[in-house]
Length: 403
Image (cartoon, rainbow, N blue to C red; front, top):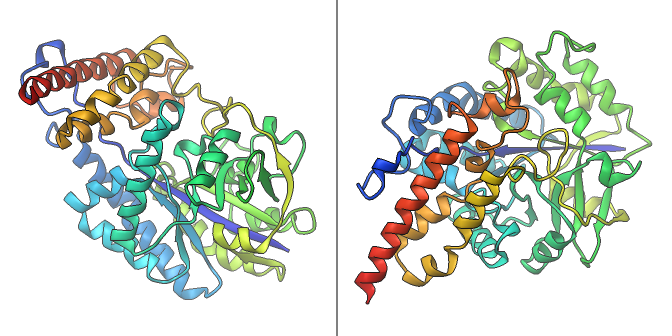
């Protein structure tokens, strides 16, 4: 038997304005909603909602109603939910309608889609709790399975996540951590007692999220019948096929014109033609299947780039400098109790800001350039450091007032 577990990451950052040194101390907003350019957060949110969130949610609601055995799961960042509450209530309601079916599971994560675990376990725990409360408030659900930002994982994370009360973690099924093992089984986390690991089948996931519209791909065009035959071939050599991908795959990264929505509309029916196939949520997979072996993952793994490590966010001096200086402010920021300062400090932790500073393979056609709204990684770094300089001025002013 092979269970199919669909998981989608839903996230949009608050992109920073192009913030010059002359803007420091002038009271200019860090996050733009009215610039009209590539950094306009509201403009981007509305565009992706039209192309992806609304049509994809309508499609999945239809599939859930047509197929009683069909199930999916999401991890929705807190910073994304904040934007929906403020500007796009229709999109929020469409996610709520999906959850009300009872066959959509929500994961837990860091509220601000941050890399807090790498720098402050206390801040990490605070953000996880903030996210739990947000999910409870908006969806009346208490998540039991954890997904760290960009599937970043190691043994230490498993131990911390277990302390926070979770029974499962999603992570990348990278070859260099599996050493020939299959990603299509559940595993035990080294150093943790109860947490089970669900590993992404990156080949099958990327066939949809990256290769679907690639005319040079030897398997192009991909239809639901062909993909179903690949998934069904795992019967007897695996127990759960974890198909994890960005939700923006549907309609935004893979445009409607590619046929991605038609492909997905037909996929549940084709998968269920095989009598041994079924659908599970992560929690159901944890209950249904045993952990076959222990995985010892000492170094961090992620689902980013071919290296599947931390280099998308921490591979050059700019990224290290920006990240370390941001987290150096933790104790002082929190001690002031200024909620506006704390909120901006946490919004600056969003991993996307550091991804935009990545200089790896920054060439025409590269994925980093595709996702970067700035003209260069250096411009992203300069804007970030100028904003951080402004934040420090506000912190100094807050200190004087408190004295």
